[in-house]
Length: 115
Length: 114
Image (cartoon, rainbow over all chains, first blue to last red; front, side):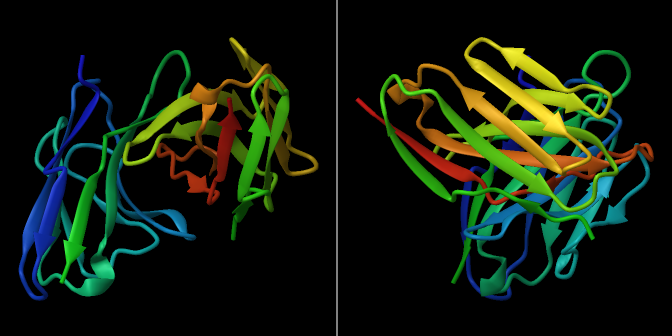
């Protein structure tokens, strides 16, 4: 049971290049989120998907697009990368239904550097 | 707007000490509060989840308490060990709307000295 899996783990881009971060969860959860983590600023929500086929903006959506491909997969795309997007990106998914409803599970992170 | 604060930002203690990490939030209308551990270069691992109707949760040497009315939570670590060295983050989510959009504190970086 892998939980939440992110790829790639590391990526270096030049300004203006594009790339997609992939996330998959095998816990059959409805919701999936993308956060970014920056020193001194904590984790900030970029986009989220409450269920398959829906996506919504979070706190810092500018410069990003997302796709909820199916219930398992939620991708984050940088169309034209900027140095300000250098960060660690985390995908997360909350438990829903029985038990610890709302407990948030995270992937290992994707470390992106934009030169 | 909900804000979550964790003080101190860093803490260094000798092995064996009992310690308390603090988390405060500005809006008491929360649904869940969750404590996480993050090791360097790794993702966040869930430690304890406290639902709004609960006052505390325990797991092994960890005990988390919640006082919604005062906007505070504490994470108590008993008999600290060097392996407890990590960054500890708390996060709150507002009343449920089908999503759990957690707001995070910036964490307390703990170092337990052998």
